[in-house]
Amino acid sequence: MSEIDKHPAFNALRRLTPARLRLDPEGGPATLESVLDFQLSHAKARDAIWKPVDWEAVEAGIGGAEVIRVHSRAEDRGVYIRRPDLGRRLRERDADTLPEGPFDAVIVLADGLSADAVNTNSAEVMTGLVGAFSDLKLGPIVLAEQGRVGIGDEIGERMGAKLVVMVIGERPGLSLTTSLGAYLTINPRVGTPDSSRNCVSNIHNSGGLSAEKAVAKIDWLVRHALKLGVTGVGLKDNSDKILIE
Image (cartoon, rainbow, N blue to C red; front, side, top):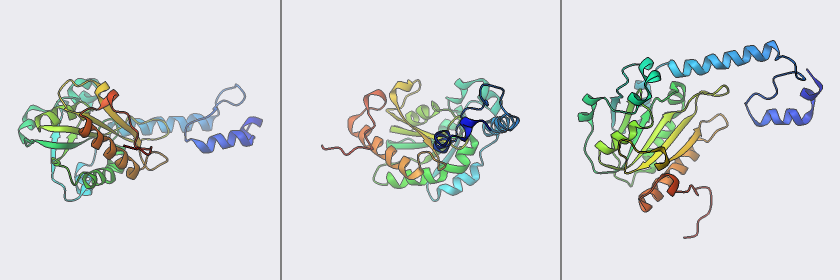
């Protein structure tokens, strides 16, 4: 271990983040321990992308809410990785399974790029959102397999939703594979640009945004989106500030 690695200030930095800091000892090659740890984390990230979600367990964890299962046009994981466009569109035969609203909001949960995130953290987030939206006309929860963010637009449009909340497994990193993201889109339509969405990211209980805080932030955004009729660049997230109206 080099002198800088022993320095209290450097150790304090390490305690602030799970990210890798200064792998090289004084400008030389990384240690074998660092290389092996990096390779292990990389393997875990790849596994999180390719492993399937346990949808039965996820549905059971949501509780008594009405749930509909759908699939994107990407028939398997390989196609999903190679053809992002197919992950954004709903499989045609599943369109008829969606009820027609109108609904104030629809919540969609998709596997995205991390099964670990959905398997580990989605139940708490989804049950929290259902409870927070108890006064809204909420559509059934939609579980979308092999789905990307854009599939929520088509689902919301077909269900006549004023707003869609898309909860999805975020791309795993080298320090974490269990992070969820939530995307909010008013007046969802196929082809909606990302600039028209609000995103709440880094939702996990390992030093990220807790499920409880994420639900509160999403609820704030949903209320203001429905009130103002806008999401994306037109809606600033001031949920952590005291507002005087």
